[in-house]
Amino acid sequence: MAKDFSSREENYSQWYNELVVKADLAENSAVRGCMVIKPYGYAIWEKMQAALDKMFKDTGHSNAYFPLFIPKSFFSREADHVEGFAKECAVVTHYRLKKDPNGNGIVVDDEAKLEEELIVRPTSETIIWDTYKNWIQSYRDLPVLINQWANVVRWEMRTRLFLRTAEFLWQEGHTAHATEQEAIEETIQMMNVYAEFAENWLAMPVLKGVKSPNERFAGALDTYCIEALMQDGKALQAGTSHFLGQNFAKAFGVQYLNKENKLTYVWATSWGVSTRLIGALIMTHSDDHGLVLPPKLAPIQVVIIPIYKKEEQLIQISEKIEPIIHKLREKGIAVKYDNRDTYKPGWKFNEYEFKGVPIRLAIGPRDLENGTVEIARRDTLEKEIIPIEGITENIEYLLAEIQKNLFDKALAFRTQNTFKADTWEEFKDMLENKKGFILAHWDGTAETEQKIKEETKATIRLIPFDGDEEGQCIYSGKPSKKRVVFALSY
Image (cartoon, rainbow, N blue to C red; front, top):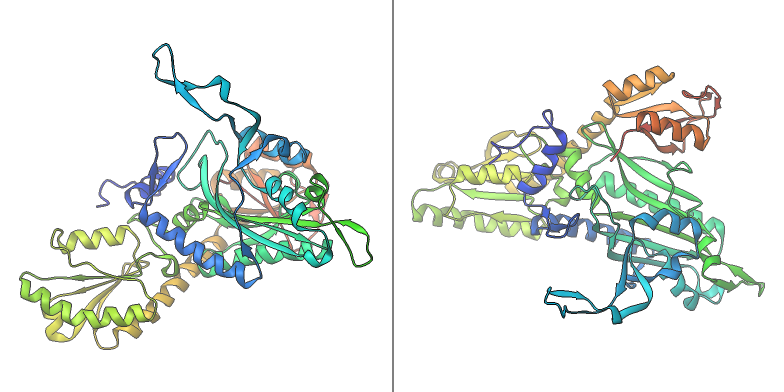
């Protein structure tokens, strides 16, 4: 199946694009810049949703849903916010079509122009804070801890499946708090939730920190983030959590009576991750044989392939396998028994290897006689013959082992590709010849940050929480309190 498949070494970008399509995860749609997420890709997103949704609810959040359309006037109320999204907004101006009287098909009905234009949701802060002013009157109404699962539209000109599309799926949390400290604690808590999800579910190690002013979310006072390193040495922003201060509360008049009976503006946060995480998953673990999926997020965790020539052999194999399938499913393991006679075993082996199924079992007549089964791991491509007795426990152990191995392998890669640069020449040389995360001193000014970006395309991915090693900025030579993380990025 993978004979015409590009390698990462030859062309990493092409490898990624081909993998997404050939593994049946997604494809481009008739709408430029938008994608169709196919069932196998959507099954991965559903597993992500389920895990994250539980984590959100475990931290006290509830789900709600807000309109797709936002009045244009709402955006003008928070100047930094509108400036950050203005170039990406899709705008609805009319609400009706009609037949062209000149016979040129269907045209917009000019008489059906909206009194106020509507923005197709690029993010929901404005519509949600306009709603919150009706929900919040007293300190007893706080905190408000809401999450929304939705789609958003940001009119990207250069798109790539999952990583950057004009429309994508995500969740966005929006919370309101009585105090600044509570809001900051919420922002940090959700960054930590994202980090736990990335490392324990995606098996993807991440760095945690704060964005520089140039890179923070439009309208935020601080943006906390997690950053991951992909196999081509580029960084990928995997999740953000924003401390919004009182900006949106003031813009939309959201005040509450505190315990001293004084009117006070509430404090806000917002936080989100998107289907971009599927792209991160692919680029962190997959190889030249196709997808590699961590067991916790694999739609099929175990595939069982019977090898037979006669119908009675299939019946015997099926009778042996049926109780094993039942036991695996009782333990919550997603198992598929592929007994189709329309494809040969070899084709099936290639298919499931390419689609990243963590464990493959193969069983034939000789295995029945010997009480054995062939087991293959997708992460290492190792195969061995093991006793069929105790296979359920063996699979449980192996799934956990594969999950851990993928994380350890990704962490080792990040460690090997994290460098320190002390001079401008060193910095440029590393970007050119090594790539990866570069720890370097920066003088803290937006001007220096912008000049580094213009000259190298590298950006400050985050300012770490730890580290107090003072030094000199690699670009300006001015004093620096700590190293920050630079990288080329998606």
